[in-house]
Length: 414
Image (cartoon, rainbow, N blue to C red):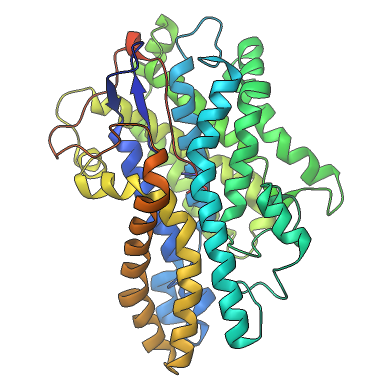
Protein backbone atom coordinates (compact mmCIF):
# COMPACT_ATOMS: atom_id res chain seq x y z
CA UNK A 1 0.00 0.00 0.00
CA UNK A 2 2.84 3.29 -0.97
CA UNK A 3 2.08 5.63 -0.01
CA UNK A 4 3.53 10.08 -0.82
CA UNK A 5 6.15 12.57 0.06
CA UNK A 6 6.66 14.59 -3.08
CA UNK A 7 9.40 17.18 -3.33
CA UNK A 8 10.01 19.01 -6.57
CA UNK A 9 13.51 20.38 -7.00
CA UNK A 10 14.89 22.82 -9.53
CA UNK A 11 17.74 22.17 -11.93
CA UNK A 12 20.32 23.06 -9.29
CA UNK A 13 18.82 20.49 -6.91
CA UNK A 14 18.88 23.00 -4.05
CA UNK A 15 15.39 24.42 -3.64
CA UNK A 16 12.38 22.22 -3.04
CA UNK A 17 8.72 23.07 -3.40
CA UNK A 18 6.45 20.64 -1.64
CA UNK A 19 3.05 19.54 -2.88
CA UNK A 20 1.61 19.35 0.61
CA UNK A 21 -1.82 17.99 -0.23
CA UNK A 22 -0.19 14.71 -1.31
CA UNK A 23 1.31 14.37 2.17
CA UNK A 24 -2.08 14.93 3.74
CA UNK A 25 -3.83 12.43 1.48
CA UNK A 26 -1.16 9.83 2.13
CA UNK A 27 -1.30 10.36 5.90
CA UNK A 28 -5.08 10.00 6.06
CA UNK A 29 -5.02 6.94 3.78
CA UNK A 30 -2.42 5.27 6.01
CA UNK A 31 -4.51 6.06 9.08
CA UNK A 32 -7.51 4.46 7.38
CA UNK A 33 -5.48 1.28 6.82
CA UNK A 34 -4.70 1.23 10.55
CA UNK A 35 -8.43 1.45 11.29
CA UNK A 36 -9.14 -1.25 8.71
CA UNK A 37 -6.72 -3.61 10.45
CA UNK A 38 -7.74 -2.73 14.01
CA UNK A 39 -11.32 -1.85 14.93
CA UNK A 40 -13.11 -3.21 11.90
CA UNK A 41 -16.44 -4.36 13.34
CA UNK A 42 -17.67 -6.81 10.67
CA UNK A 43 -14.34 -8.65 10.51
CA UNK A 44 -12.88 -8.47 14.04
CA UNK A 45 -15.95 -8.09 16.25
CA UNK A 46 -18.88 -9.94 14.64
CA UNK A 47 -20.47 -10.69 18.02
CA UNK A 48 -21.29 -7.00 18.54
CA UNK A 49 -24.15 -7.38 16.11
CA UNK A 50 -25.37 -5.76 12.92
CA UNK A 51 -26.53 -2.52 14.57
CA UNK A 52 -23.03 -1.50 15.66
CA UNK A 53 -21.55 -3.09 12.58
CA UNK A 54 -23.46 -0.73 10.32
CA UNK A 55 -21.73 2.25 11.93
CA UNK A 56 -18.30 0.77 11.28
CA UNK A 57 -18.87 -0.89 7.93
CA UNK A 58 -17.04 1.96 6.18
CA UNK A 59 -13.79 0.54 7.64
CA UNK A 60 -14.04 -2.63 5.57
CA UNK A 61 -12.48 -1.25 2.36
CA UNK A 62 -8.74 -1.21 2.94
CA UNK A 63 -8.08 -1.89 -0.75
CA UNK A 64 -9.33 1.64 -1.50
CA UNK A 65 -6.45 3.16 0.47
CA UNK A 66 -3.92 1.03 -1.41
CA UNK A 67 -5.44 2.18 -4.70
CA UNK A 68 -5.01 5.78 -3.60
CA UNK A 69 -1.38 5.12 -2.60
CA UNK A 70 -0.63 3.79 -6.08
CA UNK A 71 -2.25 6.75 -7.84
CA UNK A 72 -0.25 9.11 -5.63
CA UNK A 73 2.98 7.36 -6.56
CA UNK A 74 2.23 7.65 -10.26
CA UNK A 75 1.36 11.33 -9.79
CA UNK A 76 4.62 12.15 -8.01
CA UNK A 77 6.96 10.08 -10.14
CA UNK A 78 5.50 11.64 -13.29
CA UNK A 79 6.12 15.22 -12.15
CA UNK A 80 9.81 15.42 -13.12
CA UNK A 81 9.32 13.92 -16.58
CA UNK A 82 6.32 15.81 -17.94
CA UNK A 83 8.49 18.63 -19.31
CA UNK A 84 11.13 16.42 -20.91
CA UNK A 85 11.03 15.92 -24.67
CA UNK A 86 10.80 13.07 -25.30
CA UNK A 87 9.27 12.12 -21.96
CA UNK A 88 11.89 10.18 -20.06
CA UNK A 89 13.40 9.52 -16.65
CA UNK A 90 15.65 12.35 -15.44
CA UNK A 91 19.23 11.26 -14.75
CA UNK A 92 18.85 7.86 -16.35
CA UNK A 93 17.47 4.51 -15.26
CA UNK A 94 20.30 3.69 -12.86
CA UNK A 95 19.93 6.84 -10.76
CA UNK A 96 16.16 6.47 -10.75
CA UNK A 97 16.34 2.90 -9.43
CA UNK A 98 18.95 3.90 -6.87
CA UNK A 99 16.67 6.66 -5.53
CA UNK A 100 13.74 4.25 -5.34
CA UNK A 101 15.78 1.54 -3.62
CA UNK A 102 17.32 3.96 -1.12
CA UNK A 103 13.92 5.38 -0.23
CA UNK A 104 11.92 2.16 -0.03
CA UNK A 105 14.15 -0.75 0.92
CA UNK A 106 15.89 0.22 4.21
CA UNK A 107 12.62 0.81 6.15
CA UNK A 108 11.11 -2.27 4.50
CA UNK A 109 13.92 -4.57 5.60
CA UNK A 110 14.00 -3.05 9.08
CA UNK A 111 10.26 -3.70 9.45
CA UNK A 112 10.65 -7.22 8.04
CA UNK A 113 13.34 -8.11 10.59
CA UNK A 114 11.33 -6.64 13.46
CA UNK A 115 8.24 -8.60 12.37
CA UNK A 116 10.18 -11.85 12.23
CA UNK A 117 11.57 -11.24 15.71
CA UNK A 118 8.08 -10.48 17.04
CA UNK A 119 6.57 -13.56 15.43
CA UNK A 120 9.40 -15.70 16.77
CA UNK A 121 8.73 -14.40 20.26
CA UNK A 122 5.00 -14.97 19.98
CA UNK A 123 5.60 -18.46 18.65
CA UNK A 124 7.74 -19.32 21.64
CA UNK A 125 5.11 -17.92 24.02
CA UNK A 126 2.02 -19.39 22.41
CA UNK A 127 3.49 -22.30 20.41
CA UNK A 128 1.19 -21.36 17.53
CA UNK A 129 3.46 -19.62 15.06
CA UNK A 130 0.68 -17.66 13.37
CA UNK A 131 1.10 -14.32 11.62
CA UNK A 132 -1.86 -12.12 12.31
CA UNK A 133 -4.49 -14.57 11.18
CA UNK A 134 -2.34 -16.48 8.70
CA UNK A 135 -2.36 -20.21 9.33
CA UNK A 136 0.77 -22.22 9.89
CA UNK A 137 4.45 -21.54 10.27
CA UNK A 138 5.87 -18.43 8.61
CA UNK A 139 9.49 -19.49 9.11
CA UNK A 140 9.76 -21.53 5.93
CA UNK A 141 12.37 -20.85 3.23
CA UNK A 142 9.78 -19.92 0.62
CA UNK A 143 8.04 -17.33 2.79
CA UNK A 144 11.18 -15.74 4.22
CA UNK A 145 13.20 -15.71 0.98
CA UNK A 146 10.26 -14.40 -1.07
CA UNK A 147 9.87 -11.51 1.36
CA UNK A 148 13.61 -10.83 1.24
CA UNK A 149 13.49 -10.49 -2.57
CA UNK A 150 10.08 -8.73 -2.65
CA UNK A 151 8.37 -11.44 -4.67
CA UNK A 152 6.07 -12.67 -1.89
CA UNK A 153 3.12 -11.01 -3.63
CA UNK A 154 3.31 -13.54 -6.45
CA UNK A 155 1.80 -16.45 -4.49
CA UNK A 156 -1.08 -16.67 -2.05
CA UNK A 157 0.97 -18.99 0.14
CA UNK A 158 3.61 -16.28 0.63
CA UNK A 159 1.64 -13.04 0.55
CA UNK A 160 0.44 -11.73 3.90
CA UNK A 161 2.18 -14.34 6.00
CA UNK A 162 4.67 -12.15 7.88
CA UNK A 163 3.18 -8.67 7.69
CA UNK A 164 0.08 -8.56 5.51
CA UNK A 165 0.41 -4.95 4.21
CA UNK A 166 3.84 -5.75 2.78
CA UNK A 167 2.33 -7.38 -0.30
CA UNK A 168 1.59 -3.93 -1.71
CA UNK A 169 5.18 -2.80 -1.14
CA UNK A 170 6.31 -5.65 -3.39
CA UNK A 171 3.70 -4.79 -6.02
CA UNK A 172 4.71 -1.14 -6.08
CA UNK A 173 8.37 -2.14 -6.23
CA UNK A 174 7.57 -4.09 -9.41
CA UNK A 175 5.65 -1.12 -10.83
CA UNK A 176 8.76 1.00 -10.31
CA UNK A 177 10.38 -1.11 -13.02
CA UNK A 178 7.31 -1.04 -15.28
CA UNK A 179 7.24 2.77 -15.12
CA UNK A 180 10.41 3.46 -17.18
CA UNK A 181 10.46 0.18 -19.12
CA UNK A 182 6.80 -0.14 -20.17
CA UNK A 183 4.54 2.72 -19.15
CA UNK A 184 6.66 5.64 -20.35
CA UNK A 185 7.44 4.03 -23.74
CA UNK A 186 3.74 3.37 -24.29
CA UNK A 187 2.96 6.95 -23.22
CA UNK A 188 5.46 8.37 -25.73
CA UNK A 189 4.03 6.37 -28.60
CA UNK A 190 0.30 6.14 -27.83
CA UNK A 191 -0.55 8.64 -25.09
CA UNK A 192 -2.19 8.53 -21.67
CA UNK A 193 -5.31 6.50 -22.49
CA UNK A 194 -3.38 3.59 -23.98
CA UNK A 195 -0.89 3.74 -21.10
CA UNK A 196 -3.70 3.32 -18.57
CA UNK A 197 -5.17 0.49 -20.64
CA UNK A 198 -1.77 -1.21 -20.89
CA UNK A 199 -1.26 -0.89 -17.14
CA UNK A 200 -4.64 -2.46 -16.40
CA UNK A 201 -3.97 -5.21 -18.93
CA UNK A 202 -0.84 -6.25 -17.03
CA UNK A 203 -3.13 -7.54 -14.29
CA UNK A 204 -6.38 -8.22 -16.11
CA UNK A 205 -4.97 -10.60 -18.73
CA UNK A 206 -3.57 -13.08 -16.17
CA UNK A 207 -6.72 -12.78 -14.05
CA UNK A 208 -9.20 -13.50 -16.83
CA UNK A 209 -7.19 -15.90 -19.00
CA UNK A 210 -4.77 -17.77 -16.73
CA UNK A 211 -5.81 -20.39 -14.16
CA UNK A 212 -4.75 -20.08 -10.55
CA UNK A 213 -2.05 -19.83 -9.28
CA UNK A 214 -0.84 -18.35 -12.58
CA UNK A 215 -3.42 -15.55 -12.48
CA UNK A 216 -1.16 -13.62 -10.06
CA UNK A 217 -4.22 -12.12 -8.37
CA UNK A 218 -2.35 -11.83 -5.07
CA UNK A 219 -0.02 -9.28 -6.70
CA UNK A 220 -2.85 -7.17 -8.17
CA UNK A 221 -0.70 -6.05 -11.07
CA UNK A 222 -3.64 -4.09 -12.49
CA UNK A 223 -2.43 -1.41 -10.09
CA UNK A 224 -0.05 -0.48 -12.90
CA UNK A 225 -3.12 1.02 -14.57
CA UNK A 226 -3.91 3.05 -11.45
CA UNK A 227 -0.29 4.18 -11.37
CA UNK A 228 -0.78 5.37 -14.96
CA UNK A 229 -3.88 7.27 -13.84
CA UNK A 230 -1.66 9.13 -11.40
CA UNK A 231 0.77 9.84 -14.23
CA UNK A 232 -2.08 11.30 -16.27
CA UNK A 233 -3.22 13.45 -13.34
CA UNK A 234 0.26 14.95 -12.99
CA UNK A 235 0.40 15.62 -16.71
CA UNK A 236 -2.98 17.35 -16.72
CA UNK A 237 -2.10 19.34 -13.58
CA UNK A 238 1.26 20.73 -14.69
CA UNK A 239 1.66 20.44 -18.45
CA UNK A 240 2.05 23.74 -20.31
CA UNK A 241 0.86 22.38 -23.65
CA UNK A 242 -2.05 24.52 -24.91
CA UNK A 243 -4.43 21.62 -25.51
CA UNK A 244 -3.76 20.16 -22.06
CA UNK A 245 -4.15 23.55 -20.40
CA UNK A 246 -7.45 24.06 -22.20
CA UNK A 247 -8.75 20.67 -21.04
CA UNK A 248 -7.55 21.37 -17.51
CA UNK A 249 -9.33 24.70 -17.35
CA UNK A 250 -12.51 23.51 -19.03
CA UNK A 251 -13.08 20.37 -16.98
CA UNK A 252 -14.92 20.59 -13.64
CA UNK A 253 -12.51 18.41 -11.71
CA UNK A 254 -14.27 18.77 -8.38
CA UNK A 255 -17.56 17.62 -9.87
CA UNK A 256 -15.81 14.76 -11.68
CA UNK A 257 -14.29 13.62 -8.40
CA UNK A 258 -17.64 13.69 -6.60
CA UNK A 259 -19.36 11.69 -9.36
CA UNK A 260 -16.59 9.09 -9.53
CA UNK A 261 -16.32 8.86 -5.74
CA UNK A 262 -20.10 8.40 -5.41
CA UNK A 263 -20.03 5.67 -8.07
CA UNK A 264 -17.16 3.98 -6.19
CA UNK A 265 -19.06 4.06 -2.90
CA UNK A 266 -22.26 2.70 -4.46
CA UNK A 267 -20.39 -0.15 -6.17
CA UNK A 268 -18.36 -0.92 -3.02
CA UNK A 269 -21.56 -1.22 -0.98
CA UNK A 270 -23.23 -3.33 -3.66
CA UNK A 271 -20.16 -5.57 -3.95
CA UNK A 272 -19.80 -6.14 -0.21
CA UNK A 273 -18.17 -9.55 0.18
CA UNK A 274 -17.82 -9.95 -3.59
CA UNK A 275 -14.61 -8.02 -4.25
CA UNK A 276 -13.24 -10.68 -6.62
CA UNK A 277 -16.29 -10.25 -8.84
CA UNK A 278 -16.26 -6.46 -9.13
CA UNK A 279 -12.64 -5.38 -8.56
CA UNK A 280 -11.96 -4.84 -12.27
CA UNK A 281 -14.55 -2.04 -12.28
CA UNK A 282 -14.29 -0.85 -8.68
CA UNK A 283 -10.57 -0.20 -8.45
CA UNK A 284 -10.32 1.81 -11.70
CA UNK A 285 -13.28 3.86 -10.43
CA UNK A 286 -11.41 4.58 -7.20
CA UNK A 287 -8.25 5.37 -9.15
CA UNK A 288 -10.13 7.74 -11.48
CA UNK A 289 -11.71 9.51 -8.51
CA UNK A 290 -8.30 9.88 -6.84
CA UNK A 291 -6.79 11.19 -10.07
CA UNK A 292 -9.53 13.80 -10.53
CA UNK A 293 -9.12 14.87 -6.91
CA UNK A 294 -5.36 15.35 -7.35
CA UNK A 295 -5.94 17.60 -10.37
CA UNK A 296 -8.50 19.58 -8.39
CA UNK A 297 -6.06 19.96 -5.49
CA UNK A 298 -3.25 21.08 -7.79
CA UNK A 299 -5.46 23.71 -9.40
CA UNK A 300 -6.95 24.87 -6.11
CA UNK A 301 -3.54 25.19 -4.45
CA UNK A 302 -2.44 27.73 -7.07
CA UNK A 303 -5.69 29.69 -7.24
CA UNK A 304 -5.20 31.94 -4.21
CA UNK A 305 -7.60 31.23 -1.35
CA UNK A 306 -7.52 27.47 -0.75
CA UNK A 307 -10.82 25.64 -0.09
CA UNK A 308 -11.44 24.18 3.36
CA UNK A 309 -10.73 20.61 2.23
CA UNK A 310 -7.39 21.61 0.79
CA UNK A 311 -6.46 23.59 3.88
CA UNK A 312 -7.23 20.52 5.99
CA UNK A 313 -5.05 18.30 3.82
CA UNK A 314 -2.24 20.86 3.99
CA UNK A 315 -2.54 21.35 7.75
CA UNK A 316 0.44 20.60 9.95
CA UNK A 317 -1.32 17.57 11.46
CA UNK A 318 -2.06 15.88 8.12
CA UNK A 319 1.28 16.78 6.56
CA UNK A 320 3.18 15.55 9.63
CA UNK A 321 1.24 12.27 9.55
CA UNK A 322 2.08 11.95 5.88
CA UNK A 323 5.77 12.31 6.60
CA UNK A 324 5.91 9.01 8.47
CA UNK A 325 2.97 7.29 6.79
CA UNK A 326 5.27 4.71 5.18
CA UNK A 327 6.51 3.74 8.63
CA UNK A 328 2.92 3.62 9.89
CA UNK A 329 1.97 1.35 7.02
CA UNK A 330 4.90 -0.98 7.65
CA UNK A 331 4.66 -1.25 11.45
CA UNK A 332 1.00 -1.08 12.47
CA UNK A 333 0.26 -4.76 11.76
CA UNK A 334 2.82 -6.26 14.19
CA UNK A 335 1.63 -3.81 16.86
CA UNK A 336 -1.90 -4.97 16.08
CA UNK A 337 -0.91 -8.61 16.56
CA UNK A 338 0.73 -7.85 19.90
CA UNK A 339 -2.26 -5.83 21.16
CA UNK A 340 -4.70 -8.57 20.14
CA UNK A 341 -2.69 -11.04 22.20
CA UNK A 342 -2.76 -8.62 25.15
CA UNK A 343 -6.54 -8.25 24.85
CA UNK A 344 -6.89 -12.04 24.79
CA UNK A 345 -4.79 -12.36 27.94
CA UNK A 346 -7.04 -9.79 29.64
CA UNK A 347 -10.16 -11.85 28.71
CA UNK A 348 -11.98 -8.74 27.49
CA UNK A 349 -15.52 -8.82 26.20
CA UNK A 350 -16.09 -7.89 22.56
CA UNK A 351 -17.15 -4.34 23.47
CA UNK A 352 -14.22 -3.91 25.88
CA UNK A 353 -11.84 -5.30 23.27
CA UNK A 354 -13.14 -2.77 20.74
CA UNK A 355 -12.55 0.05 23.22
CA UNK A 356 -9.08 -1.29 24.03
CA UNK A 357 -8.07 -1.37 20.38
CA UNK A 358 -9.45 2.10 19.70
CA UNK A 359 -8.07 3.83 22.81
CA UNK A 360 -4.81 1.93 23.34
CA UNK A 361 -3.76 0.34 20.08
CA UNK A 362 -4.28 3.21 17.61
CA UNK A 363 -2.27 5.84 19.56
CA UNK A 364 0.38 3.22 20.29
CA UNK A 365 0.63 2.28 16.62
CA UNK A 366 1.08 5.93 15.62
CA UNK A 367 3.69 6.53 18.32
CA UNK A 368 5.60 3.36 17.44
CA UNK A 369 5.54 4.27 13.75
CA UNK A 370 7.00 7.68 14.50
CA UNK A 371 9.83 6.14 16.53
CA UNK A 372 10.47 3.68 13.67
CA UNK A 373 10.45 6.61 11.24
CA UNK A 374 13.14 8.42 13.23
CA UNK A 375 15.25 5.28 13.54
CA UNK A 376 14.95 3.67 10.09
CA UNK A 377 13.22 5.97 7.60
CA UNK A 378 14.05 9.63 8.11
CA UNK A 379 17.73 9.34 7.20
CA UNK A 380 16.79 7.98 3.77
CA UNK A 381 14.29 10.74 2.98
CA UNK A 382 15.12 13.70 0.72
CA UNK A 383 16.62 16.72 2.51
CA UNK A 384 14.28 19.40 3.80
CA UNK A 385 11.43 16.89 4.05
CA UNK A 386 9.67 18.63 6.91
CA UNK A 387 6.18 20.10 7.25
CA UNK A 388 5.78 23.83 6.85
CA UNK A 389 3.71 25.95 9.26
CA UNK A 390 0.04 26.22 8.46
CA UNK A 391 -0.68 29.11 6.16
CA UNK A 392 2.76 28.86 4.54
CA UNK A 393 2.05 26.19 1.98
CA UNK A 394 3.88 26.43 -1.30
CA UNK A 395 1.88 26.42 -4.56
CA UNK A 396 2.67 23.99 -7.34
CA UNK A 397 6.07 24.58 -8.89
CA UNK A 398 6.41 26.73 -12.00
CA UNK A 399 6.90 24.46 -14.97
CA UNK A 400 10.51 25.46 -15.55
CA UNK A 401 11.41 24.27 -12.06
CA UNK A 402 10.26 20.68 -12.50
CA UNK A 403 13.34 18.52 -12.54
CA UNK A 404 13.27 15.67 -10.03
CA UNK A 405 10.95 14.08 -7.51
CA UNK A 406 11.21 11.65 -4.60
CA UNK A 407 8.23 9.84 -3.12
CA UNK A 408 7.48 7.33 -0.42
CA UNK A 409 5.60 4.19 -1.21
CA UNK A 410 2.89 2.09 0.23
CA UNK A 411 1.18 1.66 1.78
CA UNK A 412 1.20 0.28 -0.25
CA UNK A 413 0.85 1.94 -0.09
CA UNK A 414 0.25 3.11 2.03
